[in-house]
Amino acid sequence: MSHMSYQRVGELNCSLVVKTTEMNTGGEPVRIAVSGYPDIVGDTILDKRRYVKENFDHIRKLLMQESRGHNDMYGVIPVIPDIKEADMAVLFIHNEGYSVMCGHATIALGRYAVDHGIVQPVSPETLVKIQCPCGLVTAHVQYENGKSGSVRFESVPSFVFAIDLTISLDGYGEIQYDISCGGTFYAYTDITQFGLDITSSPINDIITAAMVFKQAVAASVKLFHPEDNELAFLYGINLYSGPLGSSSETLTIFADGQVDRSPCGSGTSGLIALLYHKGLIKEGAERKVVNSKTRSVFFAKVVKQVKLKDTPAVITEVSGRAYYTGECTFYHEQDDPQPSFLIK
Figure 1 (cartoon, rainbow, N blue to C red):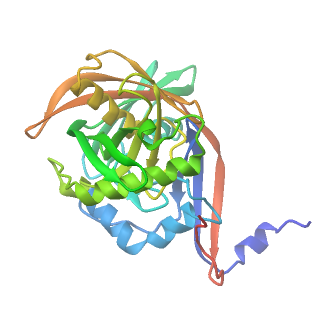
Figure 2 (cartoon, one colour; figure 1 turned 90 degrees about the horizontal axis):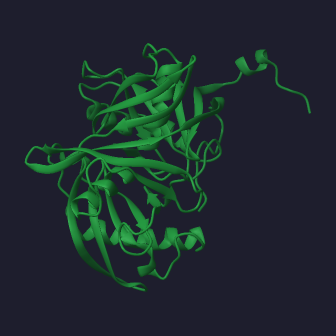
């Protein structure tokens, strides 16, 4: 098979060329769009999120969906910060749209910022302040002997929205759950209530149950965010097994049935806030959180209590490790009849 020459590539009739850096955190992909996006305008980061959703959603689909991505792809669009404290600002993208917080991507972005000169490296840890749609997140990147390593980040204030709720689901019965926000909202529930095992049950069965549950909760519970109601939507389902806090294993299904391969950073922040609220952990006590399918690990703890407007909240710290997996250049030829799609 012959290879296309660089000259021939330059002659392609492309409407879009996007270059990316590819990373993963705990097995969960992070596709960082380093060039190719048109200018994204807006006074605030939420304005930019709305602008890119309304004007450039076809690019998100090209990068996230087949044939360049897949149902479980995750990505980052760097944008210009609108707060002076931030070293960088980002939008998050996935199979369904645009999330407002992402912990596994924050861990990857910490390394990326150090390695690509966005901040000046300092040993033993380098501080990176990342503006996310939900607010400013502070990452601490291990840096020794000229190499970046593990990352711990202090998230935006996490808070419990509601506890001990119940909902009746066809085929599953009465399900008890809690709602907590770790930068974005999750419903937390025991997977055994669905007749499923968090480790051994087929993933499609878990996705089906989680999505039935998510849609029912989203339809029945009106969420409220103390700072901005644009953040008030149910993003995902965080599953655990047995009584809350009895096991380190979790599994998160988010967006449109997307399975997180990591322990889910924002979901972990919300979980830690929930455990603290229910008296199951103490401030400063580190907890191991394990993805039940991939066995990847985060560590997390409550750093301090705070208020989010009038809402009691906590600052959590989540730590993990990201790795580089490659670099890509993606083309969209103008006459391609199938620029993006998903098969489920």
